[in-house]
Image (tube, rainbow, N blue to C red; front, side, top):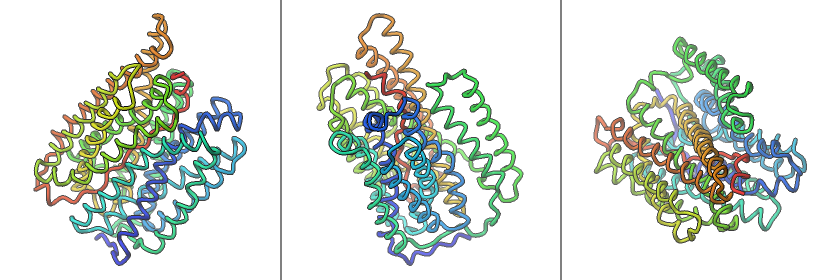
Length: 491
């Protein structure tokens, strides 16, 4: 039986959850544009700069499932507050750092704090908004906050790196973190999974953490070290072995951390795949388009960040109307339409060329924003197969899928971009024209994968009960995976 008190102030609790998601999302994207300033100030090597960008994602992705399970066992409020306390303190350390070692330590601790807090956000919203109507309003507010965070990251990073010291990209988390802790302590009611084993399932925790860490490391470092290098092949092998051990342990455990029967569900498996393909394509815009805007079109960092704000506002607005559309048309048709619109926006962005204006960007990015908002009801289909007692670990699964989509998106699109760019340079193209050739090919591939996700959602998210009876949980907005090694490509 699932027990959750709703005696707290639910809207203040939503504000705390929204602020936490805002900070953990903003922290990822805000660093990308500031990397050149950090490199100049601290005199970092390219390898050191890459780890400043990647350490957060590596730790965050590795510990998501563990954080979700700990929240289910020991309380979502408790883990939320602990995670935000670690994240806030680590942000202060990162901003004060005057050397590589302290900055890397701060980034690692930020990732650990985010991994404790982030899986709880879905469970807290589910526990404190049990009614369908109120939950729908909470989802709309949450979606707007997270969409703005993803869009404001490049803008804030560009402005700070252009006008202030780069340390402020971390200092801004400190007052927000203190406010989040105060709101969370006062308003969030404790909830945990009851009727589940209190054992920690250490083999499951250990094997999942090793598998996720090895996979994340391989995808982050593959471009630099070479995909066939011993360290990368070993990392992929370790990820596969860890995944195999995890599956074996969970299938035999009397109290598994993750119920593997979930993945035999058409709705859960199809919805998760759709989520990954959506994040794959959208991150092609969030990561590679700033390189195109600054390296090819000559936008300033601030102007490049501004280009994403209308897209985020449209994403938030369409997300608020998406439940109404899905109630009439069905979750599968609504999500499929959104995926098709995202694919069209990506394809149009890939065709803009070397002399596009700021205004020319708006229609393709608007299509991506509106389409992304329409995909939010995907969680309505997933909710029907999620056991309430495992809401925390379920949040970890969805966030891990989001992180995997970012890593795979940047890796695959980056590989296509690099290959096409090299071929164009060999044929005598200018550096800008060569980058544009690779960028266009990468986004076209992303559009094709997103469109495939639309077909998958149309087949797998068909509701077996009326759509209006399903209560949606929020869909995680992807965080653009920092990857410093691609910056020279736009030069």
